[in-house]
Image (cartoon, rainbow, N blue to C red; front, side, top):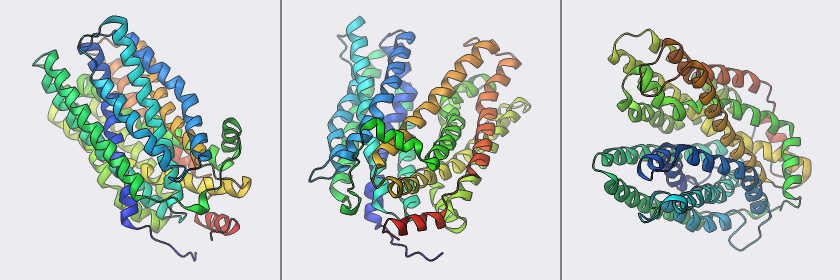
Length: 454
């Protein structure tokens, strides 16, 4: 179809993606290591830490839509998105340092209160950055394929940050053998370095990027009315269902790799390397998916990536019949590589499709609600992780899991059912369901024409 593509300058693409390195690092390091740091170093009870994380997830149901609504409504010389990105710099940096640098003099209730404020504060600050930043990506370009390029760069940078977090986690693990003082020193040093670099990257994006005046159609609805509009959008409902389904499947890599390597593969020390086998192709594979998306279209390309992800994870059941440790390690690393490469498709294309859905909402309501849409997107993503963690707890409990012991075949099957079977089912179902999505390139061009951007 005849469209005039306006390429976004590489400087803008880079500036948009760059902050994701820092926030990707922070988010993964906190999710992978803070529980161990809190229980083993700070000596906080696991149940208390679980309660803190539960409260943070409940608070997300309020903070996410509020961040989107306030971002949509902001008017300032700096712009409605960059204002909030700039405002997030100090809170993101300060709360991340708080998480990994509690004063050694704090104990008991005071220490628990410190960590609660730090963790809940960090996730709130990250929302203040994340929602406006993702919303900004939908505004930089209204071209059907350029949006995929923008979000593809962001995905690659976010995954790069995650890779750096795995390296940092290894330094922390190495410090454990030298005692509590060394772990505290390393964690504090790394948190300061991460805070400074992330702050610089966010500031760089704020300075380099410009907001478009033709997108400043402020959302005049209240926060809950805006979210009602979001879920009244039929394209959004289907997209969020698919995104939730896919993420329930792919959340397994972070939640269960430690269990699989310890109790199925028999080599727990290889867990970081296996996660790296997933992360590296998830970053480097982005250009391939961008080319496939331009050639075959965003919708079929994303469906292919979902199927590839599901099959790669589903193949993990082969670990039960491979006799040698070397064979199991080779298989899981190969499967993780394919899964990571396939997941790069969804990470690049999914947010781009949401940008098209937002254009449909503008046609329907006459307002731009990028903030509210990406708030819903953010919450759906977090909810998917919560579901897989909930499933993991119940399945392992009923299968008879006993920590730090050789597991029965029933437990191993249960672990691989979550690690391989769940992604295979959810990703395949998501690909089938997404076949009903109708907002393709032709339909988007019609929308752009109707709202005066064709």
